[in-house]
Length: 251
Image 1: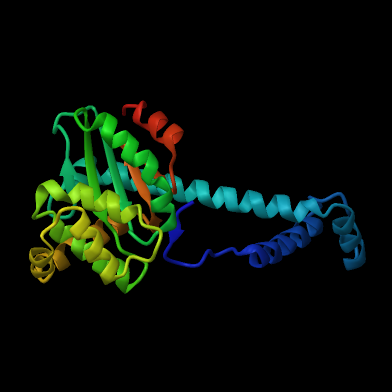
Image 2: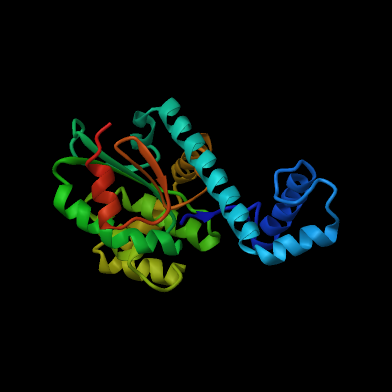
């Protein structure tokens, strides 16, 4: 699942508490197999005999909320149009401009779900770099280290042939992407680290990060990773099966 900016509105306890309230309302309206005049003791007895009611209700509420959010994101993406997600001012774009298949990824180098998606992305890119249009969008939401990592990656675009080597290598790390690790990985990926550090100071990088953030807000993206594959929006980690299925469904 995606790593969200905000705390979930319904945590386990919170969702259960709301479910209890709903149960009481349902009981009062006759929607439960207890009378409207049932005492608290009767309702309590019913719930004790049917404890899965609260679990089922909480799960249903969460599923409905997720479905509504997914629908809102897809509507937003459709309204924005795919072209906006392939803007080189905010993304590293590669692959044929007329490709029938397109893959957009919003990511954070310190996001565990982004890292979990790396094997599928790396494999798919290797197999389809000549027939798929890719857009890699740095979307740092996990603190200052993530912002530094994003700045380094955006600066690495100026050493065009090294960007993807850097992206794949840094995303493959298991440790927190701190400045020391970032520059060590950059060096291993073949980047000129001194040039990278100078390029990271460019104010255009601030504009790029802001543009990516604004686009994410417009698309109602609130977590990483977030993928748009052939126009289909999907938040959360992916694997080979999910990616291949989505990539095979041309819009």
